[in-house]
Length: 400
Image (tube, rainbow, N blue to C red):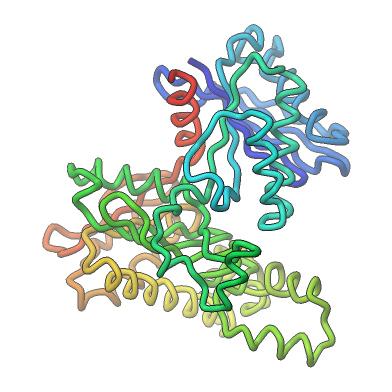
C-alpha cells in the first residue's frame, strides 16, 4: 500500500509518498510560496531531484505539481495515480471535537473549519489541502486526517483548564490543547520499544525542541500535561515565540507602545524568543555560534532556553511521580548535543548521567541511548517521524 502524506501550510504544501510494505519514503517534496511566486522541489527515494520556480495560485494548482512530479517519466515514482491507496493529512488543531484520527467526509471538513478561530492560518490551510486532494483524486481515494492535538486529549481537566472565568471555556473553548502531538506520540512509542517495555509501564518526558518547541509528560502511554497551550505560543522560549510569560507583560508593552492586539500578536510570535533576546537570529545554530564568539546576549538566550527545559523536566517529574526516560527530538533536540548535556548535567540530583561520547555522536539522524548504564533515568535521542505516524493511522483506518 502506498500512502501520500500531506502537510499543508498557509502558503506551502509538503508531501511524502510512503510505501507501507517497508515504510520507506518513495518521494518527498514541498510546494513553497503558493499564491506568491512559487517554488517546487521534488526528491525521489533514489536521489533524483526536480526543482523549479512555478506560479501556483492556490493549493489545487500546487497539488497538480505534486501529481505531475509523482507520475513524471524522468522524476516519477509511480506509473499512475491509481497506485496511491490513500491520503493522510496533518491537521494542527482538532480542538475538543477530534480526539483521534478519522476518515474525511464533509462533516469532518466542516468540523475542521469550525476550529479555524483557534488556528487561523493552519486549519484554513489544511482545509484547502484536503479540498485540493479531492479536486485531483475525487472521492474514490480515501483521505484521513491526523490531529496534532489528539495525542494530548488525555490531559485531565486540572491540566488543561485555565484559571480564567469558566464561562470562557464554555463559550469559546479556551483551554490548553497542546501541539506536536504526532511527534510526541512517535518518539514516546519508539522510546518504549528501545527500552523493551510496554509504554503503559513507564513514565516518559518528551522534549520536542526546534524552532517551535514543546515538552510533554506521558504516563501509562497517555499525556498528563504538555507545555504548549491554547496556541503554540505557550511553554518554553522558541525561535521567535516568547513561550510563557506574565500576561501583564503583554498589556504593559501594548499600553506603553500603543500596539494593537494584532501588533502584539506579531511581537509575541514573530519578534521574540531567540531572535528577540539575542538580536542575532531565530536559528539556534546561529545563536550558538554567536555565543561561542563571545556575544553575551546570544549566551543569555541559550541560558534561558536550557534553564526553561530544565524547569519543565523538573516539574513534569513531580507531576508524573518520577520519570523513567527523557527523550530529545526535533531539530534542536536531535542535533544540539551541548544543550542536551547541559540540561542533563543539571539533573544529576535525580541520578541522571549522560555519556559525553554517545551524546556527541547522536546527531544528524542518529538514534540511541545517551545515558550511562548506571543512570537512574534513561536518556534518548530519537529522530521524530510525524509523517510515518500519519501514514500508519491512515493505513489502519483504511484497512478497517
